[in-house]
Length: 203
Picture (spheres, rainbow, N blue to C red):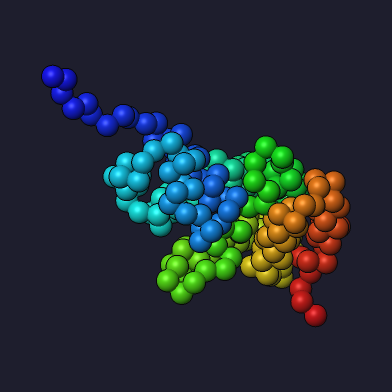
């Protein structure tokens, strides 16, 4: 008599990537466990054993998104020689990525938990923390630009970072609504044309 076999193994990285794509496309609350197990190709017991619960899986998926889809921002802000060039590179990349037909439109960190029930407030707060980290990262690059003389000493780098990340978040929503890359690039054109005005001290 044949013995009972061990459960079939699965590729955890591939399963996580598929879960990320479902959360990215549908949002946290609209994604059911059935959606996840179907996309990941595993049964519920395997999902719980490997990832804990839906919220823990989502948090891990957000980390994966940042390490893959979001990695361009860190690269641009640390590697490019000027802050203006770095910020424009981030906006141009996002214009292309958000409208890419090969992936869900828009940004997962911006869109996956914009509206949550009180029970899922921790998920909403988690993404708010990630978004603030993006603001902080850009502000640090702008502070460096002040130190290097690229920006005026009186520049409010926090407000400037908030402005450009708000443009990014708006582009994400526009892409989800169907905006093309060309349309998003026009937004980038205008945001960068406003660079000197945004850097100027508030009246």
